Image (cartoon, rainbow, N blue to C red; front, side):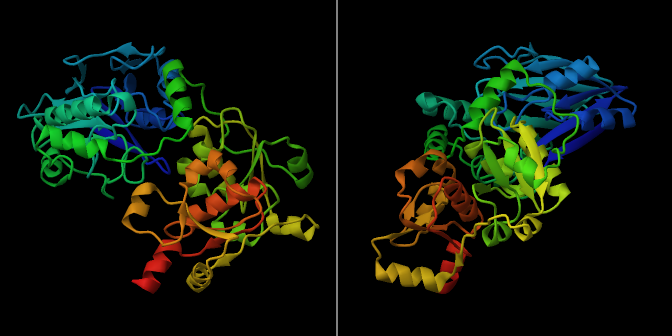
Length: 450
């Protein structure tokens, strides 16, 4: 028996390849799918089955492309809110054999209506299943979000409770293989660990420890999650089937003249926040490479022409890979060399960084021309906030920037200054000039004020 986890950094997506007897199955493949074919061939396996735990909201499925290449059949659950054009419908009780493996289907709605789990049985050992691919129903330390059907919020939370009880009945010995790990937007309390069992989760997972169905529903309904606009794009393309990823996941190299003539809708600076703040090209937004999966889908849209600015070539490649995985393919090119551009006389902009003493001084002055704008999420702000600050979540600035006064002075803050840099960069790209960033943000404030 062979099983390997394939991790997609940034999105914290986890997919799997499992095989026996010369056959292999892939669970929840990503769009750049070559890794699965390479792994299977290295083990002497033929990919014959592709299983989708649900229609993903946060990344593009590679199932239709992988199926075209390998001839494998894609299996998806019922009730997907549309026709999954590239998949067969599979239901509870269906079983698939691969050598000594048997994959059993469980319907586990709640996170989405079409959600499935796939139970792994080893015919050599009959005392309960070996493991289960839990998708986005059960994570390590958390369970799936249930906010995708707001008009049915109590119903779907109850469905998830029932699905989790079904998973728990598989037995404490079963290893869980979720579709996401810590850092994913598909959950908020995942443990920073990628291995667990049903038994460990049953004893330690805060949501699984809620035994009363009504109490569980109340807890899930009370959660607060954000849905970036690109989720709707993922949902549509994961029904229709996305095209293959670009063969070369590295943008065309642009010179300064090329950059100016590229016709890009967005100039995206993917360097670290301090580098961006120190000097960036006019009109550029700040979106560090590691933050692209979480925030690009708030500010960039389908078909937008994107030009990247980086410190070095590998940054460009990593940035493009992140964008391609969420369907933002129209990368017209990338430029490296902000400092040389400045040396050639290219105008630059900067955004000052300020510290706790300056923030406190401004708050004491109660200036009518200055606002401390907190861009953390609502749960963070509820836990702790600075008196006198105002709040708009960083992603919601994609449209709510229009509520702000371009002539006003704004200091952006978050937990550390990272998301504040993204927010400040977006506002700068929309023509705001009186901006600065609270370096250290809430962490620095707590350290100074207890």
